[in-house]
Image 1 (cartoon, rainbow, N blue to C red):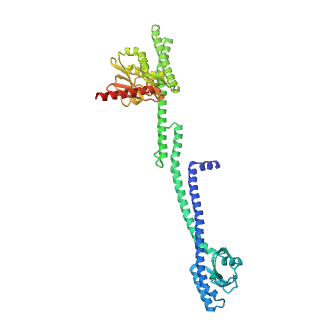
Image 2 (cartoon, helix red, strand yellow):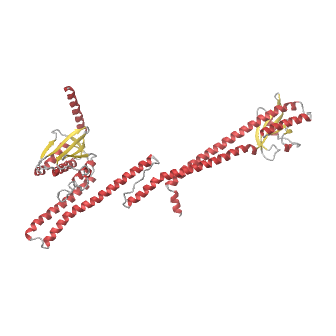
Image 3 (cartoon, one colour):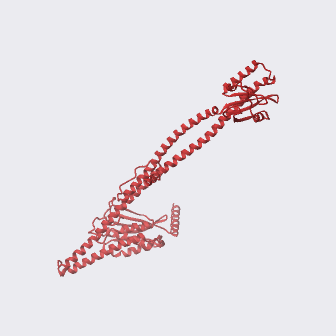
Length: 500
C-alpha cells in the first residue's frame, strides 16, 4: 500500500500539479509578506503623521494657556479641555497636555481625569530637546497596555514651555490593518483554489496523451498495432508528438505486415521446390517412376535444388547488403553500365531484343560502391529484359542534371497498374502474379535495387504508360564531374545566345 501511494505521487501528473501549485503558493506568500509589511508601514506612518499634526494643533492652542502661567481660571481650563476633546473625537486620539517637568496638566482620557500623572523623564527630554520629536510605543508609566505615542513641544518663541502627547491604543491602530489582512487572506484563498483547480485540469490534460501512449505501447507489445492516438489540441508539442507516435505506429504496422508477408512468401518459395524434390525422390525410391524416366526426374530434382540454393543465396545477399558498411569511392558509371549490358547479352539475344544504349564515351564519375551499383543496373536490365515484348527495344542511358547523374532503364511490354507501382520494390512481389510461370524469379531483384539505393541515399522512380515502363535512379556526381557539367551548361547557353 505504501509503495503504491509512493508510485502514485511520483507520477508525472502529481509532479506537474505540485510544481504549479507550489509556484502559485510561493508567489502568494511572497506577495502577502510584501503586502503586509508595506501596508503596515504605510498605515502606521499615516496614523503617526495624523497624530503629530493634531498634537501640533493642540500645542498651538495651548500656547496662550501656558504663557499666562498656571493661574488660569476654571473657565479657560475647561474651554481648553473641551477643545482637546473635540480634536480627540475627530481622530480617535487622546491627548496629554504636560508641563516641562512631565506633569500632566490636562487630559482628554476620561479614565485619567482627577489623577496625578507624570510621564517618564526620557519622554520629556526627547520631546523638548532639539528638532527631534518623540515617537514610540510604550505605557508612559500611566497605561496598562502599550500605546502609540507622538510628542510635540509647546514653544513660546524657541523656548519650550510644555508639551502635548498624542496617545492611541495599539489595537485601534492595527484594526484597519487587520481588516486589510482579513480581506487579503480571503482573496488569496480564493485565488489559490482557482489556481489549484486550473493546475489540476491543465496537468490532467497534459498527462492524458502520455497515458494514452502508455496504453498504446502496451497494445503494441501484445501485437495489436491498430491503436492510434487521438487528436491532441492542448499544445503544439503534444500534437506533434501524437502525430509522430501515430506515424511510428503506422510504420510498425507496415513492418509487421511485411514480416508476415515475408514469412508467407519465403514459406511458399521454399515449399514449392522442396515438395517437388521430395515427391520425385519418393517416386524413384518406391518405384512409382519407371527406371527409364528416372534420369528425367533426377534432372528436375537437380534443377529445383539449384533453384532452392539460388533463393537462399539471394536472401543471404540481401542480408549482407543491409549489414554492409558503405565505402563510397569515385568510379565511372558508364563503365558499370557497359559491364551490366555485357553480362545480360545472352539473355537479351534469347529474348530477341534490340538495345538502345545512350552511354557517353566520356566517363561520368559518381560517388558510391561500384559493385553494388553495378548490381543495381544488372537487376534493372534483367527485369526489363524479362518483361519486354520480344522483338522490341531495350533502352539503357545516362544523363546529368545538376549534381546528379540519372540512369534510365526502359522497355516496352505490359503496362503496370498505377496501384501496383509502389509494391514493385517489396520482397517477393511479382507483377505477373504467377509464381509458377516465372521459375527463375523470386521477387527479390527490385527489392535489392531499392535496398542498395537507400544505402546510397539515392532515389528511384517508376513510370508505366502505354506499354512503356521506365526505371530512373539517381547517383551523386563527383565534384570534378559536377564542375564539368556546369561548364558544359554554361558553354551551351553561351552558344545559344551567340546563335540568336
